[in-house]
Length: 114
Length: 139
Image: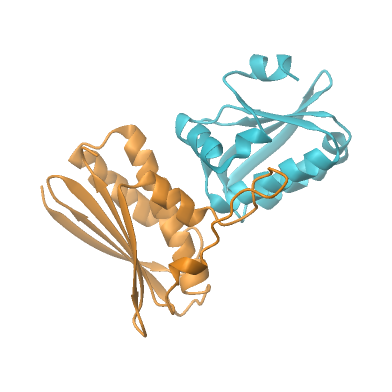
């Protein structure tokens, strides 16, 4: 795994949680992509991206997240996100990513809304 | 407060962090709010990434130079690459696909233009390309 990012998956009921800590960039986006492609995530219809509040995301990282959103749409998966700092919530809204990955203020809200 | 700092970065992704660290130190000293410092960090990161990728085309023999110039009212950031320059008209403007889904790439310039007060390209044929960004303290 890249030293710049830590990605892990867990399950809460029928929801798969992908926890992301560190830098989300073109280089590290592959690590998130690989977690997304794992069997347990691929077979789930509800995916929660749990970002650490100190995550850094650049345009290369946004591209990786858009790839996941596009793949999720093909598989009719619902993908939610929470934990992003106010700044990166703004960036998500700016680029239109919230249209396919809605952001929630807490894990509970994100899970209830699936 | 007047301060001028020049940094030379190797042409590799991730090298922008050194410039961001320095810019944050200056912006904090100038009194920028934390929200605007976050905007500065993203804008500077995207300008550097564009310089590495599109300006210098990841050529390890080329450098990216970052100039940070502070005065009492604003912080000017110049990111210089050694590439052939960019035609602003050729920068993709489409960010949403026909089906309403966001496009995959092309957000760097879009983010910069939305996060700083002023933003310009300066082409110097044969001498590289500058991206000049200005953030006003009260803007």
